[in-house]
Amino acid sequence: MKKIVHITNDLQRLGGVQRLLVDLMTLQNNDFKFEVILTRGKNEYVDELKALGVEVFHKGDLGFLGVIKRLNAADLVHTHLYPSIYIAYFTNTPTIVTEHNPHYRRRDILFIKTLESIIYKKFKRIICISEGVKTKFLESIKADSSKAYVINNGVNLERFSQTAKTLSADAKEINIGMVGRFAPQKDIKTLLKLMTLLDDRFVLNLAGDGELRSEYEDYALSLGVSNKVKFLGQVNDIPTFLDSLDIYVQSSHWEGFGIAAVEAMASGLPTFATNVDGLNYVVAKENLFEVGEVKVLSLKIKNLMKDADLYKKASVEAQVKSAEFCINKTVKLHSQLYKNILSET
Image (cartoon, rainbow, N blue to C red; front, side, top):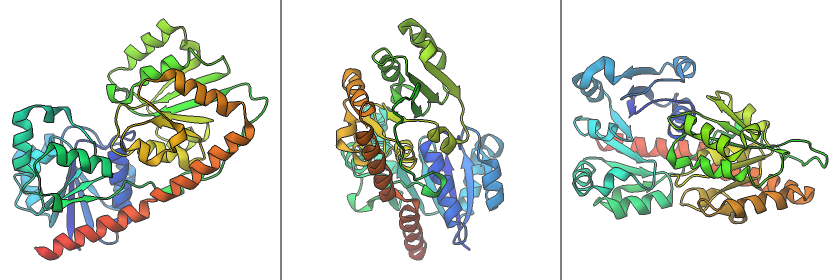
């Protein structure tokens, strides 16, 4: 059985990249042997990967030369994110890379952009997780466009309820939620501002943690909405969390694809998101709002929550739309790409 090594930053539960990798390895486990090398973070999927027989190594334990030795012993290397792409450059093993975001700030620096244009010549294929990511990548990096493939991210729908929700006319509490790191990309301040425009029935549930948590807690206090916001920290059981909500909002400045939004839709949640590449591909047009347009978002939510029929319709449509992004298609395309490259060597 051919051995494939994924090299990436970490395997934290709230990350879309991380969830995708675990789902891929789970569903490809009968076809390939997998190994994971983490460059700087921790593995929060210990039990799942141990059950699959997937070994996880840390760069801090192996050292740089140790990492290269393990990469050289593989049949194929699949690299994700910085700095993994730089490390993978030094292996002799055929390597592919996945572009997970439409923009990386480091590429605003001419030297870095030039350097990565050289590095990417080494990779056999460049997987982009959406058309938007592919377009932005080819605008940013001088790469052979024939090497760039779009394989949309997918979600293991079986993990979620896939059941439409109904709106209770006398609901005393309406739960809005979002899953994501507390980082600038996610623009959680917009959600906190949103709570100033909604009545006291609405509660914001934030599943996540990160370097900006204390700043967001202080901001909620300054806005006078602390009593309407729940900072839940790390949430491991995302399906159960989503089932506790009535509405999902993804307020990000950018997303490569938006796995969290698809997961919410698979839970039957009416889902609102910013009109950015990646998210506007998966979320219904009428549920999009421009980045930071909190007043528009509040009106969309108020209109939805005063009409039970409209709510039910939005829930059904979200659930149906999510089925377009089933992980099985993503797995099939990855497996075929792996086999094609392995046959070339």
